[in-house]
Image (tube, rainbow, N blue to C red):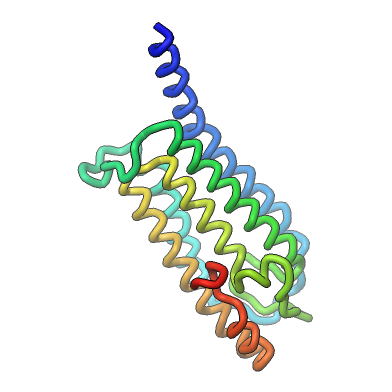
Length: 204
């Protein structure tokens, strides 16, 4: 009887995290992102709107695949790469929280230089301290880590596909940002690139 009650509790915890906690945390995260977007500098230069729309569409598609793909019948795409067990679900959710926290810290440190589009701001400053001393694009580091945690929590192969779509979009944005920043800051940015990795501290 005790074992049955424990299994029911495990099942409830798993259901709660996958259906409410994980997506709810992302909802709160993006609400913060939206509210913070009003306090930024004017734009001096921006990526083309077509590329911006394409990367945003890819990100939305990736998130949709992660959050809804596991609930559809997709044959082998519904196969699990980790067990459906509370340890994996809770662990994935904790990784999600850590990643989102790191992204929020980087966003706060970037301040009014931030933009949802790839831009150079009026009076743009090269930020190299705080999270930017660990990675040149710590917002993407945090968001990809958080998303990886979500994918682990859901645990299906289709989630890996969604993660790949988002990673491709972020990789394009990073490449464009690198070009803009090299053109804006010249040797200062080249020196920064030599010292600090793009995404994963000391690795990548």
